[in-house]
Length: 251
Image (cartoon, rainbow, N blue to C red; front, top):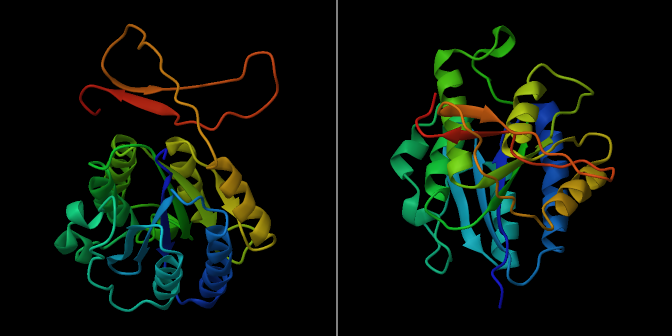
């Protein structure tokens, strides 16, 4: 049997009314999404409020995933690791660091380190409302910016693409740019969910239904961070791909 997809459902939990309503709405869509999975797919569920919590390790057990989605929205303590999970995210998950995560950027950084040893590409569905939450209107502070960069590079090393589903009940809000940017940079997409949540979920479901692996020879030049632009030749369409690569030491 061919290996299935590895999918992470990440819930940025907040009980402020405009966000809680969206979280509950997208929790319904996430459970509907489970019906589209193939028997070989594995799903893990995590949540972040003031700590990063592993709700369910990778599994194909739909009732376990469903229960984890409900728990992620309600908050509360995470359960002990699931001994039947494969591959095991818990094996590489730093519980102490997870409890110390003061920002969602830091949570993504810790999660990326746990995902990196697991072979293959992964898709992370981020049900949330924003990064740079401490700096707020003035923008991310220095520690948030550092954690954001570490999370971005960490997700690249873990071969993880982020698809953000914005749960905020608003046509626009000041924090949406942060979750739009991290999705686009990692090769994913950003979707608003307050008007057509089922359409937003369907678009993400189709985007992760398959992938191509593109290999290219690095052009000559200095080491560091480089931008990547991929386009279709001779036909119309949009290519969703990571927009950078790092050659050697991080800049």
